[in-house]
Length: 440
Image (tube, rainbow, N blue to C red):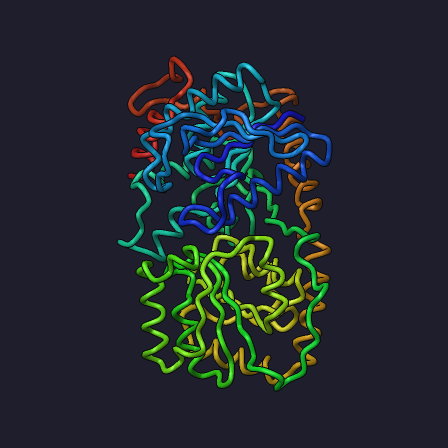
């Protein structure tokens, strides 16, 4: 197949660990590569952030990245990109007209708007992966949510209009059902792990007591990741140190407001000498860091999926995680690690102490976690499942027409107050107009 992969803000070429760079960048890059290994041709369309960047960049055999000039050629936070999605969608349509794919796979909601706009005039099917849902973010962040107000309505429209939504976990399926998306329009395909990079190989054999236990948190330094809860829990975990990997580069930590807040919190709880902020580290160095630790703490308030726990399990590290979002699918409580309620530092401390006191159990969990990842979460498995979704969508497009058996395509959408279809393919701005009505 020829696949157009659309990821408007998360380029597979981006440096990981920035404010708007992380799991989606890894997902798009790794999925594209795995699909190419299965014989498909993948073009990833993303927004140009640097005027010196070539229009087309080969990434791997069978995968190239193409940059669309939508808005200033500069880094812009993803929550500020909506005004440029009309331009992005029009350029995407032109590229797809010149090098027609078999289908379009959109990642994140703004990519979905642009993809529906581009695909409508060309009769291309659209598969959507949200990676995160606005209504869940709003539920947890409230007034701190910086998403555009159109997001929730737009996601509802996209989910009902796309040929198929690929959810990454069962929690997301429940959220989509509550948005009115039929269950038969959703398939679950999880995120994956690089099994060649994340391995237990070289993990040092450590006996209890040869040095303080080492706990690890890995992720962006934003409040919802729960680093503050882990620091508070550390006060109840004697003789352990906490390594925090993520956020700005190590030489910029002193200028980072969240880093300063976390260090002040650690000092206030009397654990300042046991908390080490390492800043952003190269992705290739993460397995070595993981193998030097005893437990990974993945303790966000909410998490759409969460790749880090799977990477840790692949590297032979047990996980203590909060029972939220995709973590409830990936971490088996009592088997590959422990699940605790979010924002409960005292329960987190109890779970950590329980595992640190039982080394044989940790080793058993490490092996169970590795086995689980090998069986379910390798990128070859994820690509095979994604390919099956693509083939089902293409087969349905070729099937004899049946009266309104599925949601209308973007070309069939009507503007508010009109009775007929749009006179031309809907733009992202028009789709946003519709979402205002949906949201109300």
